[in-house]
Image (cartoon, rainbow, N blue to C red; front, side, top):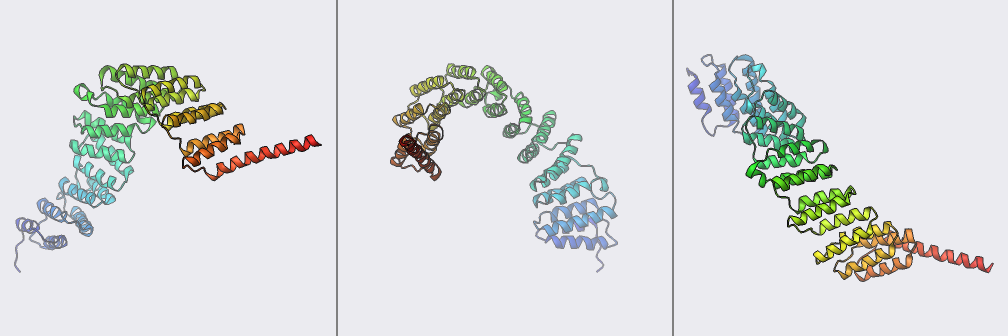
Length: 423
């Protein structure tokens, strides 16, 4: 043909739109065999950019095979941009292992990974949920102190949080803060919430709260609430209480939810005096204790057998709320059953209906079981069963059988006693 190939001509062909990727790869291979053409970084870069617009996996793998061959035969041609483009393409295709293969070849081709190299490789691996390999790349990124821009940092933190790698997400956050690359507050909130899911990482979430200051702190109720909840869940109620008092002093102003978490934690720990003080503090701040607040305090008292105090709290709840929840009464009924004061439990069941709270099947079921197993009182159990029928509720077969069994047992015992007397 007598065609003279040079870099300019090859690049113009590679940049021609709408040419199939496999044709471009074939053209480049043909050009490479031409003695008049020398492979250059610009030509390879144009090829990679053109082929990476294709969504066919076969084309991308063929391109990678060609790039590897170029890297082996042509020294100094490949650069970081070319390899990053390939990793990003594998990430889009969800081919994490292939992306990591490109990343691991940097040293072989005399290239030094930059922030985007780490980012695209982590993205490729996280998309395939290969988090352990992604963490090894992240460790290298942290050691090199090479972070991408803030938006990409946000993505890395989010991926690790979703993959339950919150400690590593926290390390990325610390380096980002050191480099003044702060992710959006939505990401910070997500990281704090993720750290609060495990007992071993809540302390990290507490430390992150110190990063909120001034006007920003006033509106940080969501992360503060997450930390309070996590501390209570891990039974560090004292830590939750200290944080609540800090919120009162410096913000953000705690609402009902925050107080309820602490009150619930104190009640479960049996610290009823502190729980009542916390409720009074809640009221001094203009917050009205809700039904849940009263319920958890009653539960704490009932669990400790202090039914008199629990009933006093119930009376206060009825004064402040026109309608209570079944859970409120359920707590007291179980407390009375635990103390085997079944007459008061049945009385409280009737009081529920008077105050417009309809007992559910579970409520009846537990009370009937207690009457049969502990008090052997099948007569009261039968009355409750009749109430259930009238209210359109259905008692399961096991509990029905329990009523019959206790009744038959009593009748057999009576018959045996009569025979003994006659004898």
